[in-house]
Image (cartoon, rainbow, N blue to C red; front, side, top):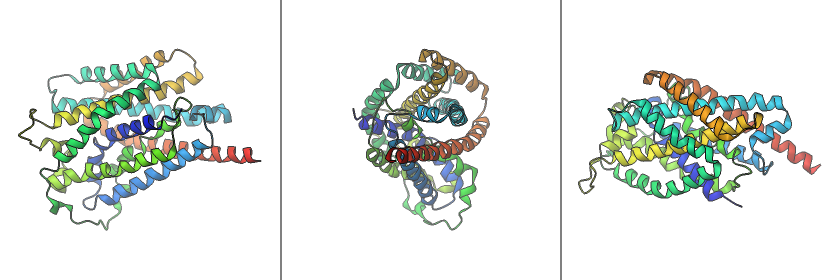
Amino acid sequence: MDKSFHVVLMYLLVHFGLIFFLFPNDIISSSDEGQWMPILIGLIVHFVFVYIYMRGLSFLPEKNIIHIYSEISNGLAVFILLPVFIYLLLTNIIGVRAYSEIVTIVFLSNTPSWAIIVLLLLISAYLASKGVEVIFRTGVILAFVIFPIILFVLIASFQNVDWRYLYPLFNDDFRFITNPSYLKSFSAFTGGFLFLGFVSPFLTYKRKKVLIAAAILIPFFLLAVYIPVLTFGHSTSSTFLFPYIMAVDSTYLNWLMFDRVTMFFILCLITFIIVQVSLLLWMASQIINHWIPHNPIYSVVTLVIIIFITSLMITNWETVEHLLWLNSFLRFYVIFTVTLSIYNIGRRSKRKGLS
């Protein structure tokens, strides 16, 4: 049964969580002007790799990447899936720790980080233990609640923009390509579509609809960066750790019964990270379960304990930044290796089928 609607909504949810969090700071820090240029390059990479990835998977229907690699050889499966597993684990550690930091900063300043981390992990672990179908159904329900709020916040955040900050439009210096901040920004461009290779045969989807979802994300990539730039200017917005959240926090609506629009937005971000962490936990548990068959809840609980302990060991934001930088190399390795290998395996399989 076609579940494209569920997959598309999950695709949007995961990417919204990546786009509105650290991505604006990474782009603004990497380019002094013409921020649309680094965004455009990232979007091209995003579309190219999503298309290649799904094209390769289309040659091997009803199979996820774990089974695809294992059918070739166990050695290849270990060589590729072990870095994928480490990447999923490290992404969860960074995500949980980073989001707990912003929750503490914005409205729970007296709450210890470990309490917020426990809450995030418990909900995520429960969803992951129930399976991918439950995660996606939850995502559909949350999407109907959250997407209107996101649109409302986006519109409201235009309140203080100064369009003169839009200029200059072009950046003659392409050194941003090698800037560490720009490389970290690829967590938003390439960090949200790996799950497409894990959901078969549980969920089937049409490639065209996923590409439409990717196109829908384009204005959000731009607005997440340009709203803080147009509100504060580049010089000021580059000093903020969370530029878009600061832009939202500067919005005042006297007819709104709540004092801060930011509260709505942070709650949406928390929902995004819960869904994302649960999905990544499920993906990691699938890799473990392939070689060590067992009740999935055991691997989920084990992973949650590892994530919790490791998150507590991260005592400052500098460590988070360092892990983000290290994870950038692992992300590029995983995305290049998985995407290109799946495409090549799929092409070879198709040729053998035709012959």
